[in-house]
Amino acid sequence: MSCTKATGVDDISCKILKIAKSIIVPSLTEIINLSIRTKSVPNLWKQAKVTPIFKSGDRNDVSNYRPISVLPILSKVLERAVFDSFYSYLTKFNILCENQSGFRPKHS
Image 1 (cartoon, helix red, strand yellow):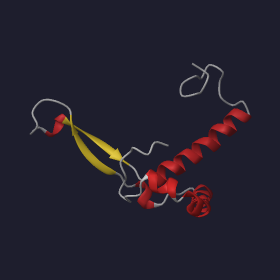
Image 2 (cartoon, helix red, strand yellow; image 1 turned 180 degrees about the vertical axis):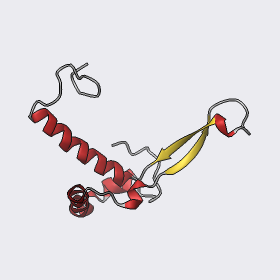
Image 3 (tube, rainbow, N blue to C red; image 1 turned 180 degrees about the horizontal axis):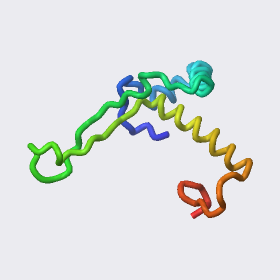
Protein backbone atom coordinates (compact mmCIF):
# COMPACT_ATOMS: atom_id res chain seq x y z
CA MET A 1 0.00 0.00 0.00
CA SER A 2 1.35 3.39 -0.96
CA CYS A 3 2.11 5.71 1.94
CA THR A 4 1.82 8.83 -0.20
CA LYS A 5 -1.99 8.92 -0.06
CA ALA A 6 -3.98 11.49 1.92
CA THR A 7 -5.59 10.51 5.21
CA GLY A 8 -9.31 9.99 5.66
CA VAL A 9 -11.62 11.46 8.31
CA ASP A 10 -9.81 9.47 11.02
CA ASP A 11 -6.46 11.16 10.13
CA ILE A 12 -4.63 7.81 10.41
CA SER A 13 -1.90 7.57 7.80
CA CYS A 14 -0.48 4.50 6.12
CA LYS A 15 2.93 5.47 7.49
CA ILE A 16 1.62 5.32 11.09
CA LEU A 17 0.09 1.88 10.43
CA LYS A 18 3.37 0.57 9.05
CA ILE A 19 5.35 1.93 12.00
CA ALA A 20 2.93 0.46 14.56
CA LYS A 21 2.13 -2.79 12.73
CA SER A 22 3.75 -5.11 15.25
CA ILE A 23 1.54 -3.65 17.98
CA ILE A 24 -1.76 -3.19 16.14
CA VAL A 25 -1.93 -6.24 13.85
CA PRO A 26 -3.57 -8.57 16.42
CA SER A 27 -6.28 -6.02 17.27
CA LEU A 28 -6.82 -5.01 13.66
CA THR A 29 -7.07 -8.67 12.63
CA GLU A 30 -9.75 -9.21 15.28
CA ILE A 31 -11.71 -6.16 14.06
CA ILE A 32 -11.48 -7.29 10.43
CA ASN A 33 -12.55 -10.85 11.27
CA LEU A 34 -15.45 -9.52 13.36
CA SER A 35 -16.48 -7.23 10.50
CA ILE A 36 -16.51 -10.18 8.08
CA ARG A 37 -18.37 -12.47 10.52
CA THR A 38 -21.04 -9.86 11.29
CA LYS A 39 -21.19 -8.58 7.70
CA SER A 40 -20.82 -5.03 8.91
CA VAL A 41 -18.30 -2.24 8.58
CA PRO A 42 -17.56 0.29 11.34
CA ASN A 43 -19.44 3.52 10.56
CA LEU A 44 -16.30 5.67 10.70
CA TRP A 45 -14.73 3.47 8.01
CA LYS A 46 -17.60 4.37 5.65
CA GLN A 47 -17.15 8.13 5.98
CA ALA A 48 -15.11 9.91 3.31
CA LYS A 49 -13.26 13.18 3.28
CA VAL A 50 -14.56 14.84 0.08
CA THR A 51 -12.54 17.51 -1.71
CA PRO A 52 -13.75 19.35 -4.83
CA ILE A 53 -11.16 19.33 -7.64
CA PHE A 54 -11.44 21.94 -10.39
CA LYS A 55 -11.73 20.52 -13.93
CA SER A 56 -11.91 23.51 -16.29
CA GLY A 57 -14.04 26.48 -17.25
CA ASP A 58 -15.64 28.99 -14.90
CA ARG A 59 -14.40 28.50 -11.32
CA ASN A 60 -17.73 29.87 -10.01
CA ASP A 61 -19.73 27.07 -11.69
CA VAL A 62 -20.01 24.08 -9.32
CA SER A 63 -20.46 21.70 -12.27
CA ASN A 64 -16.82 22.39 -13.20
CA TYR A 65 -15.61 20.55 -10.11
CA ARG A 66 -15.39 16.83 -9.49
CA PRO A 67 -15.42 15.29 -6.03
CA ILE A 68 -12.48 13.27 -4.74
CA SER A 69 -13.42 11.00 -1.82
CA VAL A 70 -10.70 9.77 0.52
CA LEU A 71 -11.72 6.86 2.73
CA PRO A 72 -9.96 5.94 5.97
CA ILE A 73 -6.91 3.72 5.48
CA LEU A 74 -8.42 1.06 7.75
CA SER A 75 -11.38 0.66 5.39
CA LYS A 76 -8.91 0.04 2.59
CA VAL A 77 -7.15 -2.60 4.69
CA LEU A 78 -10.52 -4.32 5.29
CA GLU A 79 -11.41 -4.09 1.61
CA ARG A 80 -8.10 -5.67 0.62
CA ALA A 81 -8.50 -8.50 3.14
CA VAL A 82 -11.98 -9.30 1.81
CA PHE A 83 -10.77 -9.08 -1.80
CA ASP A 84 -7.79 -11.37 -1.19
CA SER A 85 -9.94 -13.95 0.59
CA PHE A 86 -12.71 -13.86 -2.02
CA TYR A 87 -10.31 -13.95 -4.98
CA SER A 88 -8.38 -16.83 -3.43
CA TYR A 89 -11.64 -18.79 -3.04
CA LEU A 90 -12.71 -18.10 -6.64
CA THR A 91 -9.29 -19.14 -7.94
CA LYS A 92 -8.96 -22.24 -5.74
CA PHE A 93 -12.28 -23.65 -6.92
CA ASN A 94 -11.81 -22.47 -10.52
CA ILE A 95 -15.04 -20.48 -10.45
CA LEU A 96 -13.95 -17.61 -12.70
CA CYS A 97 -14.47 -18.05 -16.43
CA GLU A 98 -11.19 -18.56 -18.30
CA ASN A 99 -12.17 -15.66 -20.60
CA GLN A 100 -12.44 -13.29 -17.63
CA SER A 101 -9.21 -11.31 -17.80
CA GLY A 102 -9.99 -7.86 -16.40
CA PHE A 103 -8.19 -7.08 -13.13
CA ARG A 104 -6.62 -10.55 -13.02
CA PRO A 105 -2.86 -10.96 -12.87
CA LYS A 106 -1.30 -12.80 -15.84
CA HIS A 107 -4.62 -12.88 -17.77
CA SER A 108 -4.30 -9.96 -20.18
